[in-house]
Length: 621
Image (tube, rainbow, N blue to C red; front, side, top):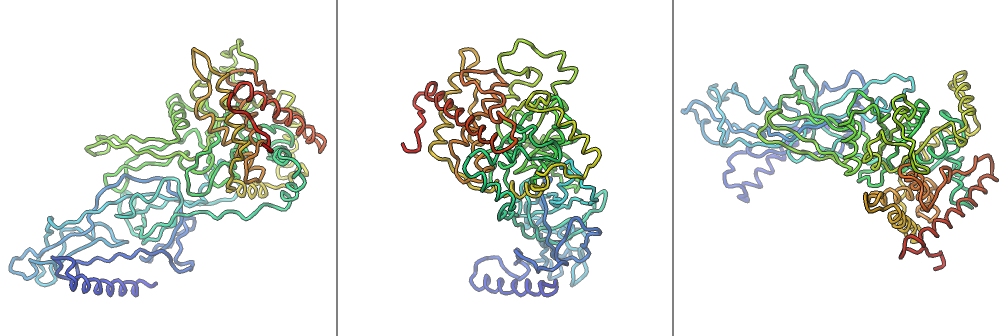
């Protein structure tokens, strides 16, 4: 709608409202039409390019002071402050008729600077005398300032470059009155507003928000035909499809058949991410112990690029929110998002734990336990009388690794460990416990053939863009992106058998891993991780129901992790329990199914023995 027509429409509506209020005597002191302020909240704009403000375009088209629509992710926000919403002015000449009454009322309108509402250089239209504000009638409102970036800009935080240059910048949004508090750091919104120029140390273009619309991404409709065919061919087993996925995944980084356990866990963690606006309760945090940090770093970096919110945290940047002074001189404190809040609904890859200082690791432990971060705002430091606290939910999964072959670690490793236990003494025990999965990736073992990895690296060096394997041609990176996008939006529910198996394993494990000195080694969050693992395997299998076969994979992965932390127990699980054989063909897949069926029987016996009252019933029962 052109600005002139819009202005006439508002003026007409103001007249109608004034007449109605005056006739019905709804406001006792209503004297003039200027006391009525009409603010329209737009929900749509014309689907024309000129009405869209793309933050990646240069130069930005903000010359016309009219409504634009832009879309972006909130990267920072200020605390709420006050501004002058409306003020009454009187003529300073007492003999002037306009020195009384409500003739001069100024209100803030979208797109205007705040100095347009209250200044000391206004003149009377009748006698040209100066106008003075009657402060008794000043009306205050709430104001908040946020910064947004386009979703395309997240490429800069993924740690991966496709060699295509791109440009992005943040844009400042002014929220007022009922719009205050409607935006959250890390969420994506559509904003309809009017550009305005704000004078700071560097003049900046900002947007006065008129309306805010939360962006809920569309759910993908399906997966590629190749994956559909693979799903059909493996329909006779609950384990084959995910085994093949792990086997061929990330063939650009590692050869098929290597690091299968890690790749399965990465895929399961990725399908537990969420694009929707809901609390992410089923995170899967992964800590990897490895001696080949370069390869693991590449594999994790490749994986986070398969989801929209995969954020790599550089060592030089903050994982969690930080405070800065607001550059617009409002007296508010600006809260910068940090990598974890930017990764909302996705993955935050924090690299090597050794690269972070002790206080950051303590903060990470607290966040992993509570899934929230509280920001303390000291009042004196930022010019306020009172201290404030703001708490933000942390809705992402964390990935990290530890280099166990560094010289400092080799000199400090213990030798008196239990069977199956790894020396993790250099990792704070409480932090180690908060990670849901601990994975040992020692590529020199029989399960990670070193020769095939070396051959893969040499071939990639000769032909970086080449597809070395048939699997890479049949199942591309785009195919995996579609698969993950579809799988993570599946709504799954637990079958009774799976639920009993998960609870039975948890209770039995808690019982055998409890001693009189340190108590139970299984925290209450262990059950949450078991449920999340079972759900993830069901989603990755493209099923809507969690079966006992999914519960078995969850128990094996979790028990493997517990063994690395505390050593083996009665329910002794081999390090290669999930992938006991190299998956060359259908015959090896069948052998794996037989082996997993035996593991399932052992798990049921373990539950029956050490988890009284949690007997596993058959399907018929």
